[in-house]
Length: 328
Image (cartoon, rainbow, N blue to C red):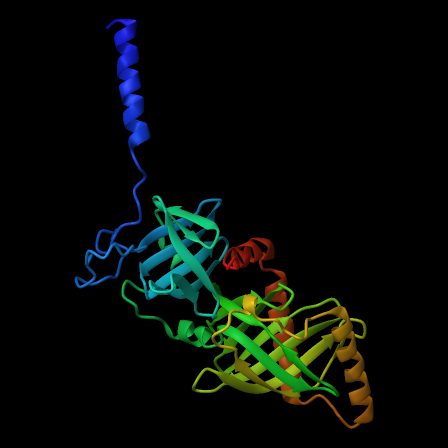
């Protein structure tokens, strides 16, 4: 073949390749076997896009989506442990709403999808991304227990002044307690990593938030509606290595408004934490007969165990993962 003939062939081939378009996300029932859609989920000809499939974040292949159906979506990060969240998608609002109340807008971009400004590309995922569920939608008891505390909480209690804490529990970890329950993870108001779990023997939940002046620790029971709680607020003072007794606390889940769209009057700050520490000293000096009960001491033991877990967690990849869903 002459040089001119070869050039003509190359030009034709190049023109063909440039003219090909990337494949868009498929309509329902054209996805892989990860879909749990039924035979009724067929394309009605309305042009509705389905995102059912498996996806990985383009700039971090440890963060992924297992989109089994629009009502059964998992986000996960896989490392030493898996951290996962559950969500559902509304085609009318084009939002993927996570179970903690936060959400991401969803759109297609060629063969990829966008969650907010983050790009996810088609991928092959393994069971490590979705370790809590069987091949159906059956769940285990420990998963059910952990899921009850997922959400944006407002805890209210009084030392001398009245305070509010706003922990956001968003993900379940495959890391387990001695009684086989999962640890939950999330963020406090300043974006620091927090953790908590459920204790089978007491039927109570706990959430630990750490700081440079005091550590904040909530122990509580959740009502059958899963929307409110009652229990104890404790704080540990680093300067005096002292543990408070129980301050009665109530809690409520804040539904409907993502935390990123709320403005809290109170922000966790060194000034507020120092005020709590000082008020604890004053309160306990005014009540000289106030002693730590057996329950207070048991709570301190659980606090130390939870603190060890939090300190040994891979916080930087976890923080990156949590923030990857906060780009609404």
